[in-house]
Every structure is written in C-alpha cells, then in structure tokens.
Image 1 (cartoon, rainbow, N blue to C red):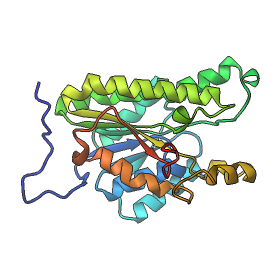
Image 2 (cartoon, rainbow, N blue to C red; image 1 turned 180 degrees about the horizontal axis):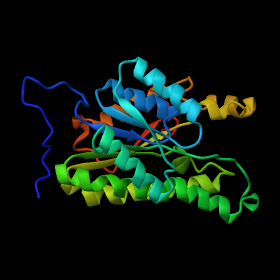
Image 3 (cartoon, rainbow, N blue to C red; image 1 turned 60 degrees about the vertical axis):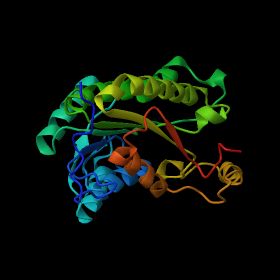
Length: 265
C-alpha cells in the first residue's frame, strides 16, 4: 500500500490550498453554513456538488449564485439518511463531475431544546440518523475511490456542544458525541490510505433557521464569546478549505473549534 499523495503537482506549478482537480460534496448546502463552505471549496478550485433534500427553490437560487461566481458544480438532491438515495446521488455526481474525493458532512435537522422528559426515542433516533447513520453511509460510499487513489478528505461538521455539555439538548449532544467518536475511529482506520478524517466544530453561528430564536438567548451566548463578535458562515470557509487541501495531509482525527475562543475559557 502506498499512501503517499499522488495528487501533488510538480515543483514550480504548486498553488497553496488549491483544490483544482478535486470533486467535493457538501451535504445540506442550499443555505447557511453549508452554502458558505460549498462556495469556499468552489472558489478554491474544486467542482462542488451542492446537496439538498426538500427546498428545491432555495437550492436552485443558491446554485444560481454559485454559478454566477464562475464556479463549477451541480445540484444533488438526496436524503442523506437513506442508502438508496445516497447511492443514486453518487452515480449522478460521478457522471457529471467525477467521483467524490472531498466529503463535507453537514446536513442537519431541527434541534429543539427540551428537558429530557419531553423527548421521545423517535426524536433521539432522528438525531442518530442525521449525525451517525448519515456520516457512516456517506463515508462508506466515498471511501472506495479515495482509497484507490490514495487521497481523500472527509470533514464532519460537529458542534461545540459536546465539549460544553449544553443542558436541555441531550438528543443532539449525544448524537454529535457519537459522530465525534465515529470520525476519530475512522481517521485511524483510513490514514494508511492517504485519507484524512477531521471535524469542524462551530459555535452558535446564527443562520436562517435561527431567525425566530429568542433574543435573550442570543444575547446571553454573544456575551460569552471571547472574540467579542458573532461568528458568520464565512468564518468556516478557511477551515474547510484548509482541511480539504494538501496542506493538511498530516492532520487527521482532529476537531477544530470555530467559535471565537468560547471553549478555551
């Protein structure tokens, strides 16, 4: 097995952080953090499949903006918790762009804060499906090509909540903790093949789905951030491009917190 990077250009032609020649899939990328990361990967030179499941109109508007910036990619509709839907999506991406060698697992679902007595197992199961089943299915679908070419990047989007132990959030925190364990174990398993597996853990970065969150909760969280500002979706751009690039080839199994220093205090 030769896990040396076979995709590095010859000296004199190398552009740092370039993703030219790679194909990225960003799940849940029609809006919010996923949209920002998909655009960042496209600007770095990757061909990007922007995944969505339900809101076709929003996805088409996002992709129109993506293309207007001169970026290359496609829309890829799929339920990322369903193996048949994922298989169909992967065939479509390969036919249009090529096989995926940069996977960003970002898709999410509603995340209500409730006391444990108000959750039921069906809701816990929905969290497990999004944050453990989906990363498993997507990684399994992409790894054969990554292993074959001895180069691949799997980037899970986690959360600071696992480290902070946020109350009234047990279902989400438990599932994200499971995703964290999954990425760490997978990282050591596939490292000999030149594939890295890392996690980006954002703080609370308000996007569309937070529009109706109580202002008192927003103010309370904002007051805790050492960087003294809110995070914005583009704060993830540099992190995802770095972890997708050749410059991160000796970094795997790690969690990178993008939260203005909140988990340092």
